[in-house]
Image (cartoon, rainbow, N blue to C red; front, side):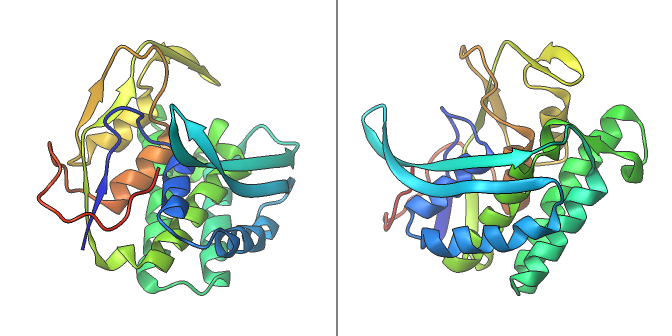
Amino acid sequence: MVIVIDPQIAGISGDMLLCSLIDLGVDKNEIIEGIKKSEKFLSNSTIKKIDFQKIQKHGIESTELILEIDENISERKGIEIKNAIVDSVNELELSVKAKSFAESCIDTLISSESEIHGISEDSVHFHEASSIDTLIDIVGVTLACEKLKFFDEKIVCLPVSVGSGTVSFSHGTMSNPASAVLQIFKNSNLTIKGNNVNEELTTPTGACILVNLTDNSVEHYPSMNISSIGY
């Protein structure tokens, strides 16, 4: 089986990828249950509501993450997020491949910040990525891929749309794609492309999940018989 990820138009974020996996047929209740078990590993953050629902997006039936959280924190050390993710996948008793994937995702995010700021990985602090959102995205995608048995399959990715313009965050206003996204793709074989959409289409969390799912970049869909589609 071949899995094709197509971020040519919309780009990629953690929740977009997670929702598309739910749309492919993963039992949403199993994912929600797994994410709720992970909540206890990150202090000062509470999931008030989490669900996946069908919506119409440009006339296409798609799946959307409904998330309400309560957290009183603006930054966390990267290692704190990593420990919470590692503890979560251990709690869920996932396979060795799944555990390695989840840890690699957060390691990629931490190392990108380390490179950008010229500091040790132990000193990295997250601002936007400090939210429990990061844990939800990485643990959720890991669990969904495990349920779909994707870690044993070939995964390919079409060019990743990153948008254009500028992006404002804790370090000020920068050109889009921001440094973290560029750094994450720097050591990957995946191709990125800009377009005339004046906003961020690919997030750092989405990028770090993507580059750890696959390093197989393709320009076009491969020859294939289609068995399932997720939006």
